[in-house]
Image (cartoon, rainbow, N blue to C red):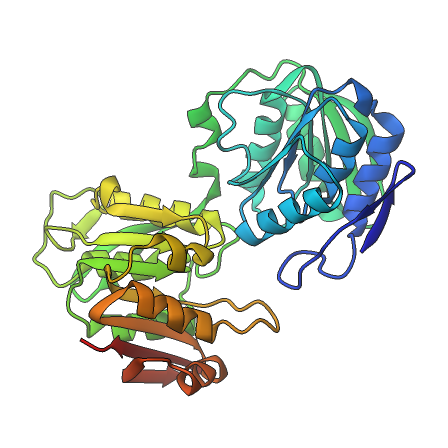
Amino acid sequence: MDFRFHGEDFRFHLSHALFSSFDIDDGTRLLLKSIAQKVDLGTFGSVLDVGCGVGVIGACVGRHAPGARVTMQDRDALAVEIARLNCRENKLDRVSVDCRLAFHGLGGRSFDLVASNIPAKAGEPVLKAFFRHAAACLSPSGIAAVVIVAPLAALARDAISGLGCQVLHTEHSSAYSVFHFAAGSVPAETDASREDLAPYVRVNAPFSRGERTCVLETVHSLPDFDTLGHDIELALDVLRILPGDRSILFWNPGQGHLPAAAALGPALPDPAAPGLAATGPAAPPSVTIASRDCLECAITSRNLTRMGVPPASIHCLGSEAEIGGIVPPDSVDLLVAVPRPVPRVPWQADLAGSAMRVLKPGGRLLVVGTSTEIHRLLAHPGKLTLATGKKRQGFRAVLLKKAP
């Protein structure tokens, strides 16, 4: 779609699978208007766009800060790829777009401008941490410019004032509030403090597989943080009847319940492992995690590590698109997939093809989804054969097998 900022025309690709899929949202428009009116972009040498989505804020600001190096971050690999496409479309070359959680991987850098359309569903601890991190990574003369939904404006105002930041500008509409602020006396942070997942954690809850139990952390803004959905319950039922596997790949691990069940496995208790009342196998499986959402990879890795799975046995991919290209052929005993389809984009043939490539002879593919989605998968299974399956509450889980 076409968009005009500061007297120049831009063109942006959007996506059905991302926020504001048909138009540039009103919050982004309000934030950019405030930046155009109140900020001298020509003086900036560095810009950070946090939660960049398809890259509208970073691209618009980057065009009008010609001497600046622009860094964009988003936790969604699809958003990152579309943001890169939009940067090319708008001929921006001093830009890097990274699939990371907010403020991760900055390596101690500071920025003249930190900008963000702050996600409303992030959770209060995450939002408070956001303002602290934003202020701490500003250069001495830098400013942060953010927009947030109106119901969270008071939280934002209190967080900014509580940090001792200097408020430079505020602007409000019926739906959104904009804040520009300087760091004030906020101290610098280490990489470790910025990248601590603790603010994301919402619940610590026991999770059991038979007589074996562990404690899992679950995070804000992912499903199944307190109660498991029917799809995960169904996948767990099928996973329980499977023997232990040595190499497992999880596509969309969520909070980590399915990988935790595999790690618990059919084994004798090991009370010495941290975080466990009774634990999984003495030799944990090799676990590969693939998701376009890097928060899923982060919390799943954290939970498996707390269970005693060695970090060297846990491998994360940047997105599910990397399954077919990075995972070695004939290397996986079990692929567990919880697809989250992009509207009007078929996934079944791609999944079957990737499974055939990465599974060992005799390896298995466990897929759970709506009954309609699984019916479409079984209509074109490729060379995979159906071994078993279960249905519940409109969901279906099937186990497919690659020929020995």
